[in-house]
Structure formats: C-alpha cells, structure tokens
Length: 186
Image (cartoon, rainbow, N blue to C red):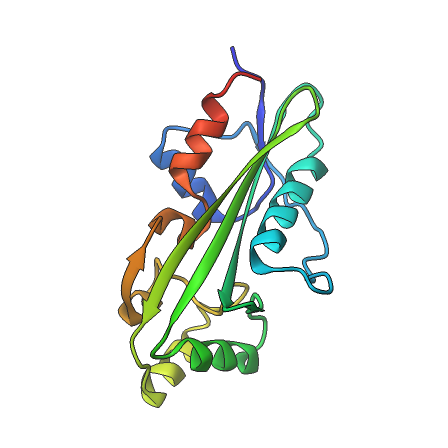
C-alpha cells in the first residue's frame, strides 16, 4: 500500500486531472505561500520554486505531498495570476496575436521528506483577440486567479490557435510527469 497522498491545491481542475489518471488524493489542502517572483527569477525557476515550496509545505507525516504550479511568460516577462479586471485585460492584450510559454512544475514530497520535481514547457499561440472578445471574456470572470489571465479549458479555448506540448500542463497539472512521479519508488 502506498503512502497517503495530500494534494497541495484546492483547485477543482487539478482534482479532475488527477482523476483522469486514476488518482484520488487522500486529502486536499491549500498551500498558502507568497508567489511573488524573486528579483531576477526566470519563469522556469519560479514555477519550480513554487511547486517545490507548496509540496514541502504539506503537512503529511508519513505521506506524500503533491503540488503543481503553472507560470505564463512572454519571453522573460512573467504574467500574474490575474486578480483584477485590469490585470486580466493587460494579460490578454499582451497575449493577443502572439505566442507565449507556460512553464508548469510538479513536485512530490516523499514520506522520507525529500522531493522530486519535473518541469514542463508548453508553447501556446493565441489568435488576435478583438476588443469585443476581450470584454466578453473579462465579463465572464473565468480569468480570476488564473496564470496569464486565462483558462485554456474554458472560454479562452477559442483564443488558442495551437499548443505545442502538454495540454494538461497548461490547465495546471502535467499528467504524464505527475504519473511518473507518483509511480516512482519512494
């Protein structure tokens, strides 16, 4: 029998994604950490740090802690998890008509207290978003708390021209890498 699994996220999307690979966490807890990028931190390093910090913050004596975090970036510019309409508009205006990258890290804290982690880089290309489409999307409120101000699995799917890499990573949890981490011996 494997050690209990605690998911360090209250995201319903991550629970749905885990269910797709037949995984049900024993417990869910939100890891409340400061997600502000450090000075000079690249999008790739930010994603890795956030996932690792969240996994290690899980209170799971004798168990495993699983965390993932996507970071949306245009070049080295890290886009926020939009919390205001102004942030959502700014993110979508920047993404409109161009490509960007989503760096999604997943980390697993083992029962021994060490951690394993993986990073997935996915390229996403957006169509040019009209002002009417932008306003309709902002009005939907779907962007709230989403990296880069959009949810690929929702209404923003209409903006995505292509994805090169892992769709599940863009949604918030790279399933292939997660399954491999969970199946590895502790």
